[in-house]
Length: 254
Ligand code: 0WD
Figure 1 (cartoon, helix red, strand yellow):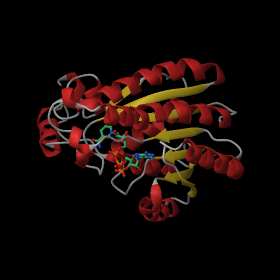
Figure 2 (cartoon, rainbow, N blue to C red):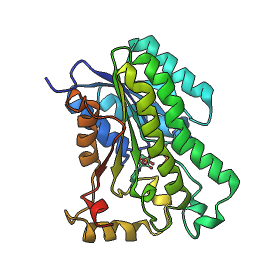
Figure 3 (cartoon, protein in one colour):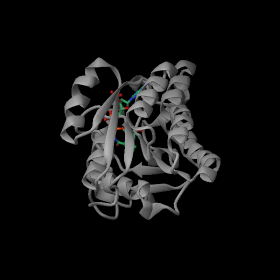
């Protein structure tokens, strides 16, 4: 059984078994969903393939969101395999780590554009394709961080990109709502992943959140996974355009 039985979806953004997208994939599978996965480049292919197999999922190919042809290719493959999808998880972000430290004011135009393209615009370009495959309605979920709302040390240009991503969630919710496609975000507390390791003084941020959040502990990928499962399930059928904090409550004190 399970809440997601009979539902199929695409998971984008697994790098390894510490990825937030992996926590989400496990929760969705536990609830009965069937999963398809993309990977970025050959190095990650070798990591994603066994993880996909562990959950009985399919791998639909390489996708680098800076190359629209690779986005088209993976959506064509999903359409070929399944015809339609019910949900999509977008867990993709990138910025040059040299600019995830020091002063935001020093951000270069090249890295600003690249960060915005990968971490913000990619949701929009993917949502346009996902909507076409969500013929019975559906749910799209992305990942954001508190640095969108408040200045967090070293988060810099990524905070600006996440603010734009959260605004995108609201605009996309309005555009896709008439077709019964919901668009939401989870604002996750800090979690030690590959992407997070690029952020300056990340260990300090983890400790700070652990000591100061209402629940007095750090967020896990399984906690994000369970909330994600809820948000893409029919239990959340009335929720769209929303940013849900899964952060041990840190946002009420931070
Ligand atoms: O504390 C954290 N870890 C938080 C992460 C707190 C709140 C939010 N998030 C967000 C991230 O900003 C991101 O949007 O969660 C999402 C997932 O990130 P993650 O799970 O923390 O990190 P990771 O396991 O590294 O997965 C992110 C993946 C990439 O991995 P690497 O580390 O190789 O950059 O995003 C993918 C890639 O697989 N990615 C891309 N995919 C397609 N095209 C691209 C790209 N150009 N760039 C990165």
